[in-house]
Image 1 (cartoon, rainbow, N blue to C red):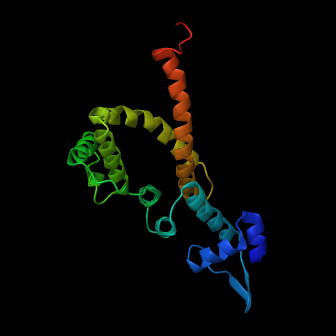
Image 2 (tube, helix red, strand yellow):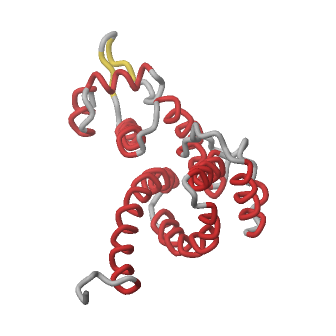
Image 3 (cartoon, rainbow, N blue to C red):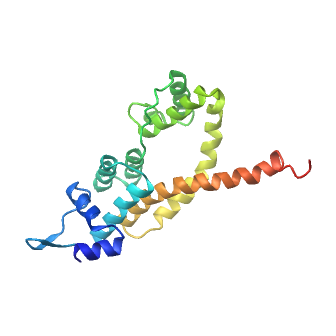
Length: 212
């Protein structure tokens, strides 16, 4: 297909496609003439993935490039690739970390037997958690750390569903794509469904005011 058809099938404007090509986020097409190139379904797949990373994930071009590099590293297991992709998707906060928040995170990781990723300087995911606890401390919620263990137990149910969804895809490329898009969309879905859960549980715990 030519770039116009690629644009039509993906919903991505031609100028944006050309920008992604210049930035190396999309492989060059096969030249059919000095001014024309042919693109295939793999270009369409990559283009949709890049669009998801930008539009759904809100990632910068540099971060998208990191995610794609993690995806294209072929000598990793899918388990290792999932970790690499999640690190690339996670954006470190600019918050100056509270040393006590770092200790809370490291203690949490030790309790869970995950000491390898407990260093906030080496893991974006761990840095995000320490930044969240730093903000919690700054607004007077020092004991928010007590929620980490029950949060993890609850989220394991979600993780099981995520991994079954991912593993049920077809080819390795389908699994990797589902891994990235599912993580990004899942983060948004979890936020929304969590609010529904709060509404339902609060009726039982604190009531809805109908009896007053």
